[in-house]
Amino acid sequence: MNYRTRLLGAWFAMGTLLATTAWGSSHREAPLIANDPLADNTDLYCFRSPDDPNTITIIANYIPAQLAFGGPNYASFGEGIRYEIHIDNNTATMGDDVTYRFTFTKTNQDPTTFFNIRLGQQNLLTMYTMEKSTDGGATWNTVLSNGIVPPPNIGARSIEGAAGLGAGSYEELITAAIMTASTGETVFCGPSDDPFFVDLGGIFDLGDSPRQNSGGIVRDGLARTNVHSICIKIPISMLQKDGLGVDMAANILDPDFVIGVWASASRPAMRTLDANGYTDSGDWVQVSRLGMPLTNEAVVPIGSKDLWNALTPYQDLANIATFGNYFYNPELALYMDDDQFGGAVPAFAGLRIQRASLQGFDFGNGQSGLWSLKNTPSVAGTALDDAIFGTLLLPADNSPRSVDLWPIFHTGVPNLAPYQLATGKMGNPLASGKPFINNFLPNGGDMLRLNMAVPVTSRTDPAFSSEGIVAAAVAGLTDPMYASDATLQFIPNMDGFPNGRRLEDDVTRIELQAVGGVALAAIGLWYDDYNASNANQSPVTNQLVNVLQYSTGVEGNDAAFKTTFPYVASPWRGTDI
Image (cartoon, rainbow, N blue to C red):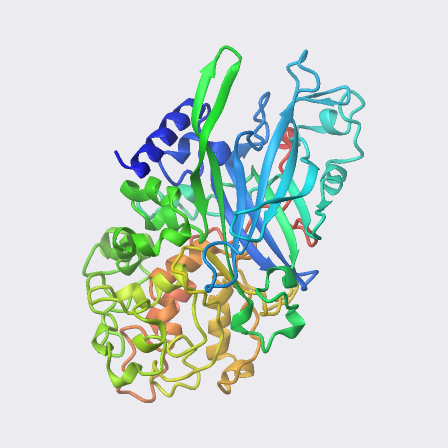
């Protein structure tokens, strides 16, 4: 039995012991971690702080689909778990360049009562220690001790009442829990509204999103549920590989300001039960990880999900034989192709991938995509040239989405042809066009990548859009303010997903549009109903419009986000549900 098999076996045994509650959330992305909700990564966000643009905010959420009234044992961060946020800012170094570790302790201040809060005392009072490593985890420094975690937002009698904590408000408890690390980071750890929004019922009913024949009824499956958030606001100079502030960036797409971020949870390999509880021992084992949203949930199939969770992103390239084809030929694309199973999923009728783009390129599963251009003069000097990035972006025949979906998840997108908007390309997708994204960090691992030099789109700007980079691409192609030439300029929402991830970004919609080929269209590989021989035809064809108009029906969170750190909405109150 090899180490990985033993690792997963130990994890399974431990997870079985920990399974105490049924958690109804899309975040239950893998069989084993579904049995261990306290260690379950739900979502990861990384964005330039809108009210403090010299900083980056990273938010890692854990413990899915908490009911606000879920007492008497309310959800809380787990003891015996290492919650970690990892940052890679330099491919010349191996592994993480900056890592933050959080460990939590719980205390029962009044074990004589079954109430969580009574007479100023808390049960499961939670505190934390924050450590930081800048050498790949070889050494750690404690930068915050005795961090405060707010209690669950139980109700007015427990929070504000004289028989409870007697606090002025729950917001006061949140403010009191915003801490400053000795190294300058601003930190919050505690319960919050779950910021992810999606119609879980429709999505997992064989892709019935937007729901068909439902009278227009849709439901955010995570509405009025809570998670536990670890939020860190970090100066950009602390994350930039050379210690530079953003004012030193060469331009708004400076490649030296790209970071990759992922989050994880780890547990000791062994748990021994006894009359007094349990004892943990053995090596620490990673049981959950998260970078790009929905990777393990909707791209990796069930048979590989647990293995994916056990690996780090730095092992993804070595395991590309196992995982690569899920991106090169994604299952979801089968349901967006009328020659495959498109007719069986009517909700995706507006999402149709290019089978004859420019009447010459087939991006259907198992087809050649751009492979016919391999090693030809056409790709010389582009990102698809083996002399520039090797075989990362055009690795093999019959791997059509290796040029768009795989790099979005595993390398980021370089500011190099063909990955520039079709504006200025004069019909040739391989020509240089209008730059609009550069979050290229080619370590091959699944991470959330952000170019920290890209300016913030104000949340009050009329152009702000939850469509992120898709909205930026549309503006860059059609708005005369940006489409009149191919020069580099800031387009609103260039700071949106998948260039990082803002709380407001509709990642489910964007990723489904991406599987439907919208990224290919943005760079000039238009949809099949565009006739490349007709110089007068607009590339804004019916098929492109259908993809851009596609919506799951749930396009925003059910609670307003804060305008200042920690930005997440306050947790739902148990008596208000």
